[in-house]
Image (cartoon, rainbow, N blue to C red; front, top):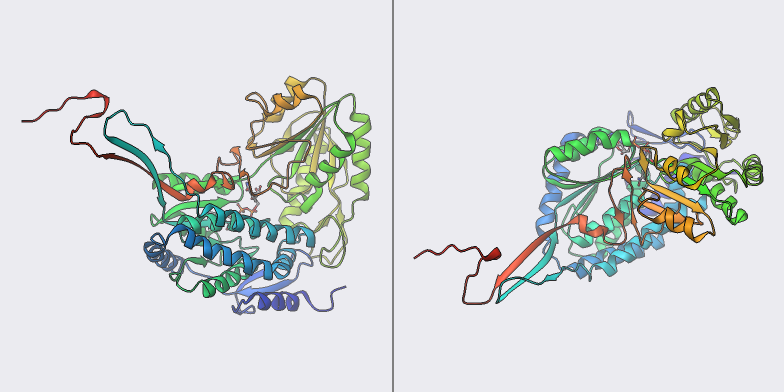
Length: 506
Ligand code: NAD
């Protein structure tokens, strides 16, 4: 049992992180914890004029920050990682309070921030360009990478801090100031991350003002970033609906965009699969974070020869999974974010039943009062991939379908709008390699014998089609935060033209 009201725990946690903002502003934007449905804070919001000022400050900071050597910029991120380690418990708790995640998942999200900071520190000495063979004698050609400009980061409620850090840690070492527009449902975690960042800035000593700023408020602040030609790159995480608005607007002003949008992720369980491993991976992938991960497993194709073995075991796991208050229990499944999420889930289940689906679970659980929305995760056996199976419902629903032949199931797997994450469970080399090949999964993430969720920061994260095509985090995702220049240097005393073109003037 909590020994104090959630609002008091929230205030105490934020204070430990160094947040000084007033949390009880009259008429302010209310922040509701999905854990109990209580209002835990009311915050002053920024106006679009504030957003314009923040952009100007960041643009000014860019002029100085781009000239700081990259390894020195990395030092700031190294200090931030140190401060994050000190505040890991408090930040993890804020994630649990605001997004309803289990303590282990809340801490895991902060660990991802630490991991990407460590990655970015190393990267600050590795922003390499190529040296390229030239066709002209006495010439040298090379690529150099330069800071890009102000980066606007728009984030979703379900990962209230890690995706910001995937972007911010890379952007900062690449020489770019950042402005963060967090979800209006999770602004407190953002304020906590920013306060921890300010501690790193103070230790760093000579960073320009406005290197990292947070805008608290609704979509209009995201729009202000999206519309400003002074924001060189927009990195937007959220629904495909949001991406459909943001993408064309940024393109219309020739800005750069990283879109990290919704997914409709699937797993395929083949006859040779390790059944126990598959069961555990599917359970975490489909029910973890109450189905509110972009990488949540939403569709499952099971071979007919093992269907009657795997699906009953899955139903048992669904029936026995613990649903509860993440701050007071060790429950594996916490709350949905709000009533709209609950209603969306019930609508999808009703549609599925009307299309012949057999629904197991999905009912509301009386964990807290009327204002909190806890549900039993739902497993739905579907006769075919149709209706709600074709879209992302941001709730714990797993649609299970039987298949008989491998090639047609690959087609079905790819026959949805989302293209984020995917898994195959098999010990058959041919199936595995086919799934990972050009005619296999069309997703940005394709896994073998692990679930669809829980990616590491070392790889590039993102997906294709309606997931938006963006990549962030590891691998060479840093290139999106820099501009590339191709330089050709003539150190000869002649002026040969490329392609042998002759243009002699007397
Ligand atoms: P959402 O689209 O409702 O909101 C996301 C953010 O976009 C918020 O900060 C919101 O204020 C802002 N926004 C909304 N409209 C905007 C506009 N017109 N212009 C600028 N900004 C605008 O998403 P949500 O409900 O917070 O998050 C859930 C969704 O996010 C799911 O679809 C999930 O799959 C997706 N998601 C994707 C990833 C990924 O990496 N691919 C990660 C997390 C969540």
